[in-house]
Length: 278
Image 1 (cartoon, helix red, strand yellow):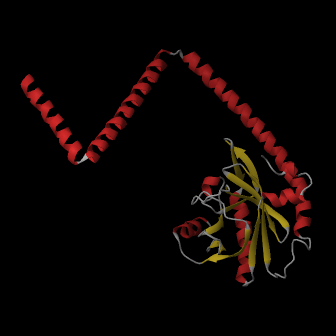
Image 2 (cartoon, helix red, strand yellow):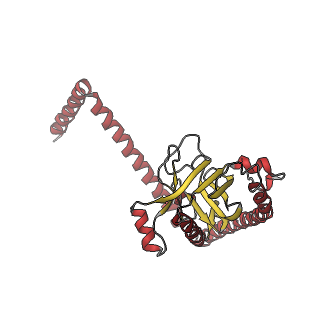
Image 3 (cartoon, helix red, strand yellow):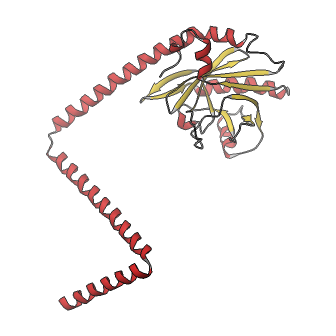
């Protein structure tokens, strides 16, 4: 038996030497696989140790620890909500000033005779951009987009500031059919046309940046949940906007959307700190 094991060991060593000489890539792959397997084993051992420790912890100690964690989380959430209530109040107080500025001759220098939608971005926390949407210079609702990135990541980056034509994308895509099934009043998606380096930029429903896919979400409220910026009452804001814009487009009138970055609000607002969160 020992002789057989010895011969098997010699054969394996010989095979290893031959592979190293004639096909070293195989040795590299096997070695990497063994390292990966070792990592899995170590992880399983650690989990086993943690599980065993849990068996010896007193239930009361576990309960107390969980209670303390929940209490701390609740306190943090309360502070966050209070902060956002304050921010929302400040935003409401400044909206009339923004409306006056948007309707001023300096901001409407051209002779465009159609409907102008203006999106003013005012905060970007690295994941989410919140904004204010104005319909012909009057505040309409809130918006949510992805964050700004120097280098575009598909589906995770907001579009550049600028002015874009807004119309229907009259293609029956899977998303279009999904919206038709859900909303009886829906026909085609509202589409921002000719956005450089972007395709399929729509205005639609959602609450978090993960819902955007690079598009623009509409909502009637803003807030935060689990440390994430979010918007609320999105469906009602979207329906109201969609039906209003649809009437305009059905009359074959022009609609454009002008998107301005956070610096625009900062430049025209005396107390810009009320609108911009570092």
